[in-house]
Image (cartoon, rainbow, N blue to C red):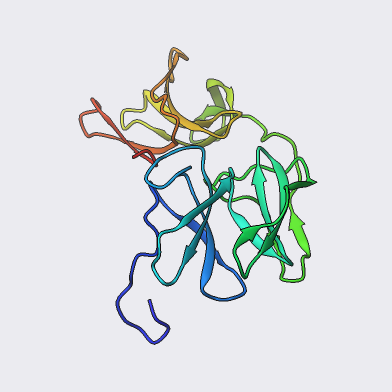
Length: 220
């Protein structure tokens, strides 16, 4: 949309989404991350190059997190390794092979967003760290007293309890960064996996009759 106002025009057509745009120095071209590995296809994700002239975005390379431009380089994250690659912002071309900058980088809970940033002069800041710690869901009464544990220890991100208080669901992230929904029976301790799709399922809600669970996902 123009700075003076007007009609918003889509700049990308990647599926299923385009995220974390950042402009190159010319103010016309921009980088963005998408779960799409190629135009119109879902995949492991990658860095794309877009333009304000509405031309079709161009796929640059695979990446598990967003990309940044700084001091003649693109900086990006892949499998918790921070990489740099020489890049010409005028021709929008990669000039050489990528090289490792730092590892391991802490994993973000937000799809495609890594905990790192860079200034125009090439100064880089990032969060280092090992694997995300697992957590244990626990059942407490209103006095704060622990009654029982719910399911096994895992990398739970969000969770919810059924209206009748007999079940809980949680979104569990695996070692590859994929999140799936799990169902936990509170009294028996039984746990079962609800989703197995390679995209992420994060939030859920029960239907009023408790016969269905509705959830959101970034799948197509």
